Length: 378
Image (cartoon, rainbow, N blue to C red; front, side, top):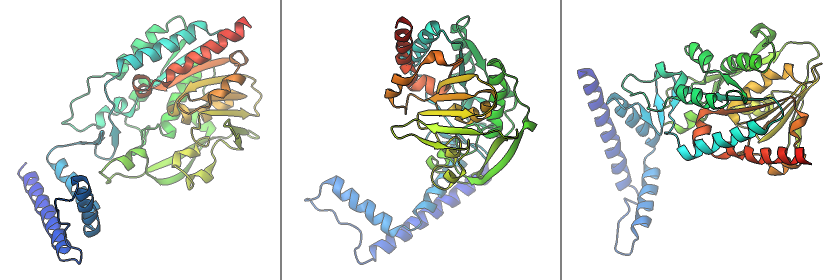
């Protein structure tokens, strides 16, 4: 404890020294520190002060990092809604917005009750729920229990839809590299664990890992959480792809936008350097994606979900001739005109817990339910 106090005092003195040096340099520069007069609006004056500090404070980034370290020495482990563990950034989630969560569940329930196609429901827990052991020791466990929430929601679909509980397999493998350190998404390994349970519940025989070739395509990936965190001393992530090793296997990915475009691969690797690294998975989430494969299976799957399910879809392609993925947060509603639910063999509703309790777009499944009812009556 005494060593920590000494370290904190040293860092505080260092920050003060850097600040004094900056002010000294600024005051002795040609422009000098901005002077306030009665003709100034305070907002304008503060903008000038901020511009002065940016111009004369070349070590601003370093100072911010020192400030974070100082707070960490004092026991703080959460910044900008992000927990900092030994070598991982863990995204916190806010308490549920009850009205939104209830509306989402109600709309999904209505769709399930009226669906004539076998329907499946799956929630994906967030890193916060699975990586609890990685949370700093002085962090109190959040009051919202994702596991209980998932079980309660699944109970409401009993006898109406097939539920897919992936919490146990993820939690039992929590010590493995199943979530990215710097991003909220599942890694290739985490996606495989989800696939192994989901595929079985869909009535398929999950392929063993040895049927996939692992390709490590990027060793220095820093994700969305890293860009939001003031703490940067985190080891970069590795992006790995699971490629099916079956001979003559091919898949075509079509993004159904106003101007559709196609990739002749599940993993367009050229996007690694043109966009966010994880866009290499199917070309990223654009709201409406169709995957067609040349395998002998004639089954088709329609998926309504969010980007959390995206890394799992390539693993499912050996079991289906066609998979269509629709994300209501991004899709073009004109697609409803061409969407025929009865043409698919199975329908999957797959969302992260975070989306279900905070975002209202899963409730847009009501539009599809209305469409299906109209198609049946027609």
